[in-house]
Length: 452
Image (cartoon, rainbow, N blue to C red; front, side):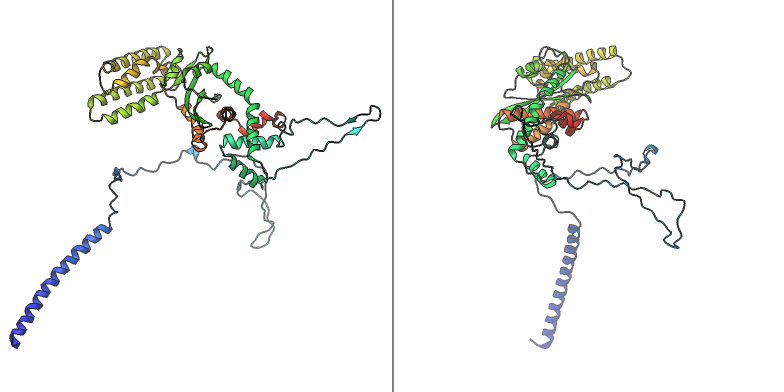
């Protein structure tokens, strides 16, 4: 190969390499552009993660101005217990004595005093000998205001233990830690348990009074939940009355049947019973309001399971419309009692017409249709009775604290423990419902002289 051929060959290789470089540069630019797009997007979630729903574009609402009645400083919730004055005697700039003093501004600081150590009192009783009768005599001490029964713990400490256990729902080990940390008091688990049993025994009479008041009430909400006693399944029954002066009555029993309802309410109860659709409450032959919250939840489930059937959706919507009409009529201020009674009859009649066709057919709406037909007179009592709720949320909310306790502790270990738990739950829940100080009420229960 001569020089001319070699030069031509090199020029050809150079041209091929330049074309290849140009192709690679275009490829690099495309890859850089793709990389920039990927870096600007969030990572793709796994297949099992549900995608986010796009938020609807809403115009930014103008900021609402605060009402003139609310346009003031923070109100003092507690009375001032100590006051400190801060003054300047002379001008900090020229040293001239200041005159015409006035209040510039005030500042409130809420603080706790140092934790108080428990007071341990030793009662020394002396006796003397009488030379005339030859007997030894000593003063008679009364335990009122000094101790709680034969325990070495004072009433205030016992009331605090009851408050921590039942109002704040603290475990016994946490109560031990609290007393040790803040008050330098060493109290054993057995002593705390004994105090709780003593408070429950002291409050049995008050609990019986609550049961008697409940049987004379115009409205009673009832519900039940599971509870374990020494590893055996049982049930907590709650009977509650609405209002600021209402009451909460808890009962433990191994059974879940109508005998419990019959024993609790008895023949003297003449009010309205509010409950779910459980068959144990069918014993009561008086006025009965069934819980619409349970029915509406089942109705929602029916709609989800048969979302592709327009007939089912229409039936569910019609049933919900009857409930909404009943609520509107019950909350109407202008409607008279006669108009409410007439509306009640219309609602029951339309409910029967709505449910009757599907109660006899093999249809998705059959189960709920049979239920509303069975309880058609018990679904709209809230229209007739003032202050009557259409649901049983009052009882369910009242049971919730003990449900949480059950999930944490698993229940109680003995019948005495269950009885103690039910009595204290009834007392403390009723005190809190009525806006009373549960600590003071517990102290009054075990030592009336100290709380007076």
